[in-house]
Image 1: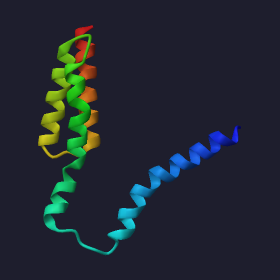
Image 2: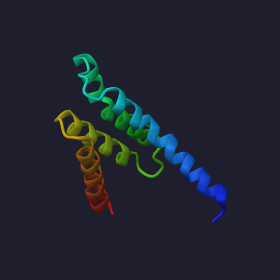
Image 3: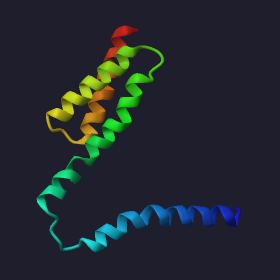
Image 4: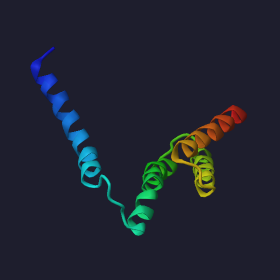
Length: 102
């Protein structure tokens, strides 16, 4: 293997790992204020929304795929499920819709 590729892989690993390690070390044993905890609790849902919303409008085949996926994801997220369950439920709903349409 080319040594430049190995250097690039190690560099990317360090750049990916450091932003995760630094806050963990800095805030170890410290309690964050309730407002910050509430904001951080909603970050996964904001990220999920940023991933789903463009897909709703940019779907090429059938707009109902986007609408159904978004509706199911919003409903499951509103009910308080974690992000993995939100994604799995939207995928399952779209699988059932695809099976019914075909």
